[in-house]
Amino acid sequence: MKKDIVLITGISGWIAQFCAVELIKKGFHVRGSLRNMHRQSEVKKAISTAVEIAESLSFCELDLLHDDGWDAAMENCTYVLHVASPFIIEEPNHPDDLIRPAEEGTIRALTAAQKAKVNRVVVTSSIIAMMAHLTKGQFDPTHWTDLSSNNITSYARSKTIAEKKAWDFFNNQTSNEHQIELVTINPGGVMGPTLSDDIEGASLNFCAQLLTKKMPGIPNVGLPMVDVRDVAKHHVAAMLHPDANGKRYISAQSESTPFLNIAQLLKKHGYDVPTKKVPSFVIKLLALFDKEAKGMVPLLNKSISCDNSSTVSAFNWTPESLETTIIDMAKSVQKVLNKKH
Image (cartoon, rainbow, N blue to C red; front, top):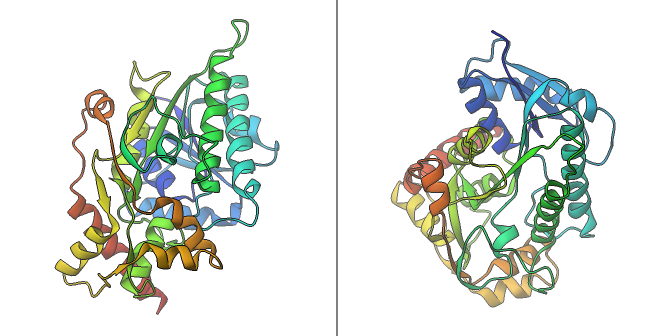
């Protein structure tokens, strides 16, 4: 029996690799896009730590900012998971460094998917596209980040613009062209283990900074959190669920988890990490000359929760316990740190 092919964009990424594992387990063939084909063996090695690859994984070369290769990448694909998008906490020199790849990559993916008559595209967005302007209260899948707010980061702007562009594309399909289905998954603060030795991403790097004490204290930041393995399961469920078309799904636990709770949990399990608070005014002061601190400022002192009931009911989801998520994360990040020293 011929396997359905699923294209995953940005397969060298953390979430994308867990999506690949879920799909291979379910008997799909995964075609993963890379910006640099030299990373094939690294990605294979990472994914094969969790699942037997056999003939279920192949690669193609794509760049979010270039047209080359998109038509070939989509060939014979039944589904697309568009996961590739830059994610950094620090403020870039220019907002377009984040906005252009996010926006243009999304449109390239959707245009090529429609041309190739793909059934459904699942786009990885973020709760940041729903709540970046909020300081308190609850948000749900009907909410959008207010782009006129001065208190949002370039990253939040990039995710909001890219997702809005995706829905515009979906809603403006004409009857004389192939109609692609669209679902977005909007993860919260993603935590959990890594399959690869790449811990440069914001969440894994946060854990590494705690474990190595490069982070001297904990800022007053809290977000609705989610396990990376749950995020991957949500992508696959959104791809397959008959009623998911046209919907946005929050992939996060309903209540916010303060970063301080994460540090305290690690401490409780014997990890020697800092647990003292950094006052918000210190972060704001640092923000004057430090890009990462500047990116952190809009996240300070928020008190928000989300209504994830549609995700829980549609995907029959019982969230992974935060304790398991954080400890699994620390173990796998520590393993990578041990290799490097």
